[in-house]
Image (cartoon, rainbow, N blue to C red; front, side):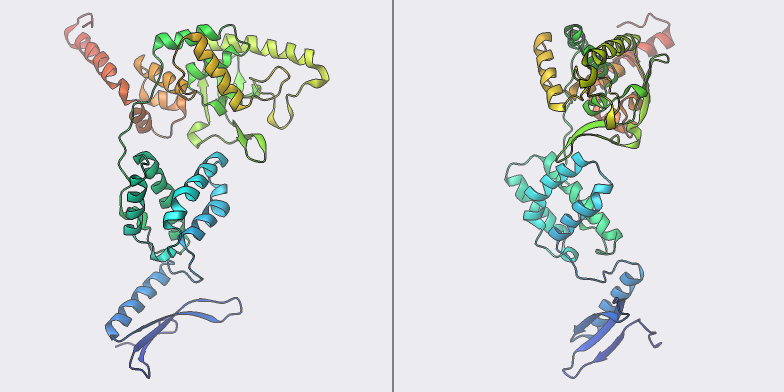
Length: 387
């Protein structure tokens, strides 16, 4: 048998009759070697563990320091690593999952000893508590995301969360307004000072933060377009701030209906008049820029106040109080039913993939299928295309 080289470990029998081995897995700050040792009555076991350790070390997957618990790693990941990669609102949501579910159920396990069975047992526990499959699946995704980083950094050989599927979730039909209800909302908002704010939500499917964070330098009234570059968000300890869009796809330029362009021209004039009236008390500009939709003194609109105004508008229009985000779903559904290609709708909404668009709005598929059948009838048989 070839002699092992330096750092490749050695196997020998100690004075108690045990087979022993050690491998150098790193170096201390003062240049001394760090070793991982193995001991067993059976030589074959020591050989196997030594070879596995060598392979793991050479692949960069063998930790060279103290192994954290799952709870310690999740806390480190969320507070040190994740903030540079996710939005503050997303981080805050993750923090709730860690506090309520992940750390209490899995936090005590040593990170490198976490097994798929531990995770399965935890999800079963959450299910018995009455948590929805969607909530449990989100917990699974957060855990898997954190463990993926642990693998990349050499704290784990593989991610145990990827060895099992999260709970299956039946996608619920997203609520949206009918065309008649959407028109009722537009008509009810006509007398509002910020009528164009509601038109933008219903006609373009802009997210609330994208609407409230839209500045005039992102609007081209001559071309009839607006560009989503930032979103307004309330963050703990910082107040209202502008953040980057949700994803790269969320940064987009969209064409506006002529009616919305006309409303924005009127809004621009109205805002200039408000600024003159406010004089030195004008609160617009500054780090947030000149926003399109503001309070009468130019200050940004708090998302909570915007939500309250939406509820009042729904009541005036005589329509159900759906979520403000459902105005976005309404825009998407109306576009698809009007025959706009799904890829174009994807671009307008800022979805990451066309599959997300199709999956989210699958409830309009029957109506689209009927339209397709009518169109095919007209193409092949030359009929009027009616049914």
